Length: 277
Picture 1 (cartoon, helix red, strand yellow):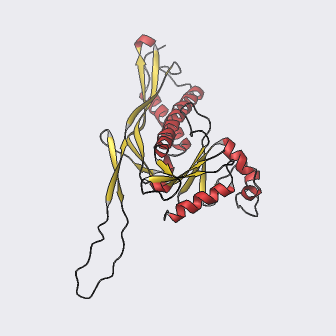
Picture 2 (spheres, one colour):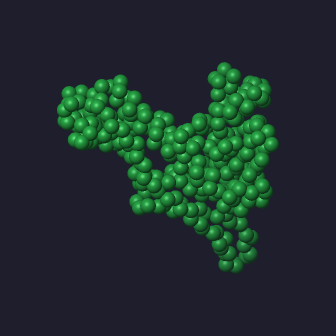
Picture 3 (cartoon, helix red, strand yellow):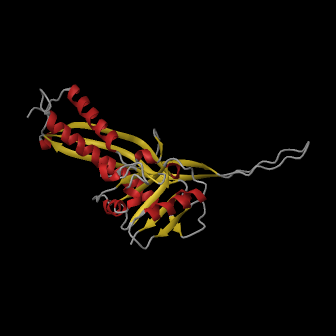
């Protein structure tokens, strides 16, 4: 096999991976993202709330003394490499190139998801009255159901969490349980025709994100997370990029996808951990 590869082939492969990567990311767009980060960490700034105070005539204003806090996302380095002989000097085998691009993109997007899941799982959860850095834990005592959704929605609303940009991360078993309830699948309750589509896109103000069984870990056992987009931060130092290098010792091309990123819970009270039976 020739060790020469056209620059056009490398650029085309990079474009293929990036296209697949952007199309299959599951949780990336469900959190607050900061790109172009320099260094090994990034500090997300959280501005506290303030209370308006009445001003007396001719008196000086009284500052609200809003507190600022910072949550640090530690960036880590990730690779998705594979040796391959699909390239030669004249052309690229497009079928195999596409398959490899999909494999690299899926591996990196699953790793992104796992970083975000780990950040949510690292929060300290309490049953009631959480602080700003604590999340709310709800033990369902049953399989995942509509009542659990209403509870998660109520908890977030009571904490002043905005009604928009709310998400649910759940498993296939959780979806099966939820779709067994008429309230979730009937058009009398839900405009999303779940029985026709075979899926639930949004319900009770949440957008649903399915996390399948994964070697990376996936969701913790018997756990469903409900959260607001601003409650979790995802910092990216090196966004997904590819390299294609000739390795003489292997007489093969090494195709690699790389990522440098990290996630952190910015505001624990914007996350609810639902434990199923």
